[in-house]
Length: 510
Image (cartoon, rainbow, N blue to C red; front, side, top):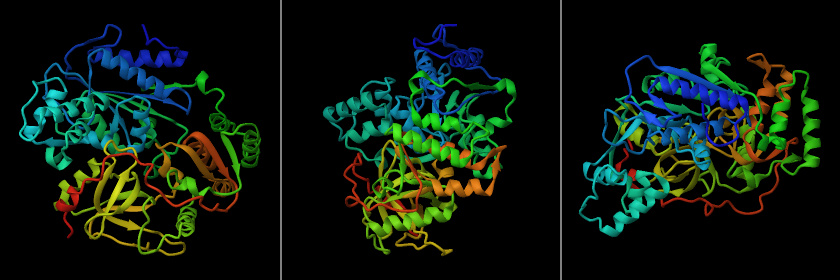
């Protein structure tokens, strides 16, 4: 069949054809650009696997273009129009905000799995604006919104395809037009899921309930979720449901970071040999650094990647010490990692509101300053479509050799955070940064222990995941030293609208 007008490798073309066959059986013909109404039937799942640089993201992007050209409507999780019998829908999903953000930066309109599982409930008056922006209704007349403000909303939507961003451009806050959140009741249609190696069994089951046509993209060389004994969800699929991409794309062939990652597949390669290989590449190419110390300036936006939890805690405390951060408060610009939401069941709506704003477990956040109430924080959620929020926060600073973390300040309930200047390699999966620092002494410790996972030395899996988080430059840190910062922590490099304070007024404190 005819594939999109670009150069595919043979295995990419075969994978595109396999997905096209699955979709044709479901009534979507990519070759002819035609859609038939969805039919009841047994759900279908396919897995497309490949290591870093094999072209998974390119293939996903081309499938999205072909589906949109065939008339399939992309669902973002922001807002959904009225249900129509002949409507075919597509959602592009990732397990984390950061992973979805990486896709959006490449032109793929991705959202998080959570934003598809839980949908916003709009005020009917403002829903009329959403329907108009989507081309499903005439331009509405809304009290308090002039034609000029509606035009701002229209221009914003044309640029970003985000209903909340468009309404914000018209001067509205989320609390004006979103009245709550609910778990999805109606199934969707076609789901494309990136970073499937991060999925646990429960998430996979949820996705299969929602999407009768599901294609998951994953890297079999990454680390499995912590609670799944080294197995990934695509390990449970039949051989006929799986395809693997092998060829490394031509444009990636001169990438020294990917070369190092793929060198780890050699069963004879030992840790010392690998470090010598890194040192040699660093002498030839500036994209690889054989570093003698951790660069503290980089830690504010891209955490140091470690294996051992004790190493993570030591590096975080060293980061705070060199910035003279007081124990009793955070400095604006300090990085945080969301560790979950601590709210009782009676406040389920508030939990959904926080999670829908991007404060899901594992979300990377930058502290902007205190909110108006004690225990509230203004936050920038990295990778979220509307990044700046204000919410009740419980911040935990872990200390070396102490079981209980120190809590500089806290609301009685709300979003919980750990410091984000360093994270474990497991937690880093799904994320990418321009510069990545890998703390090599931890991987050496894993190599000395001789541990394995899924038949491969653990240090190699750790090294592979850590290295492939780097988009532009890899820093392989070989000594336990920390450089001095070149300046104060900053927040002026973060974009986004000012943090709305609505949550402070609405959120319970006890």
